[in-house]
Image 1 (cartoon, rainbow, N blue to C red):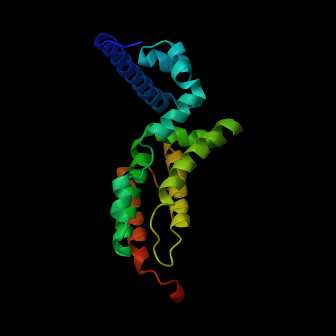
Image 2 (cartoon, rainbow, N blue to C red):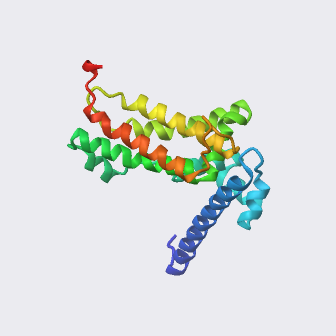
Image 3 (cartoon, one colour):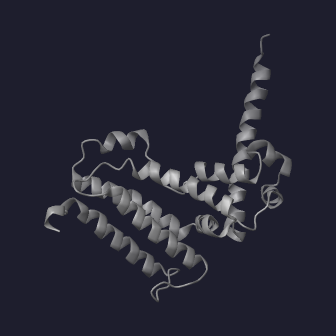
Length: 216
C-alpha cells in the first residue's frame, strides 16, 4: 500500500509534535525538580507544569523512574566526548591533555554551582530510599565513568582516581550548599568560593603533566 504526500506530511508532523511534547515534559521535569527536589516530585506535578496529561508521561517514559532516567541520560548534567573531541585529543601533548581535561572539568564545576536540579538529583542519591538512590547514583556514575575513562593517559598520573576525588568533593560541597550548610566555615553559595574551587582544580590538573612519581 502506497502512502501519498499528504499522509507523509501527517506522519512527519505527528513525529515532530511527539518530539516537542517529549522535550516539554523533560523541561518541566527539570523545573519541578529544581523547585521542589526529587523526593517531592510526582507525575501529576510534571504533567501540570508541561500542560499535558499524566497518561502521556507514562506513554513516553513508562513512569517516574523512566522519566528520571531519560532526563539524566539526555541532559547536559555531565560532559560528553563527541566524535570530533575524540579525534582532536589523539596525538595531543600531555600538557595539552591536562588543559583539555580541565576545560571539560569546568562544566562539572559549573553544573554543581549553577544547576539547582543537579544538586537536588545528587541529594536524592543519599536521601532517597535505598533502591531509588542507588539507581540514580549508578546512572550518574555511568556517565562520569564513560567520560573520564576516555581522558587520555598522562604519565604517572591516575586520572580516574583524581577525577573521582575531585568530583566526590564537589558533590559533597554541592549537597551541603543546597541545604545552606557550610564546610570548613566556608559558604559554598558564595560565588567567590566557587571561583576559588575553579582556580584550585585548574592548579591541580594543569600541574599533573609535570608530576614525576619517582621523586615523591
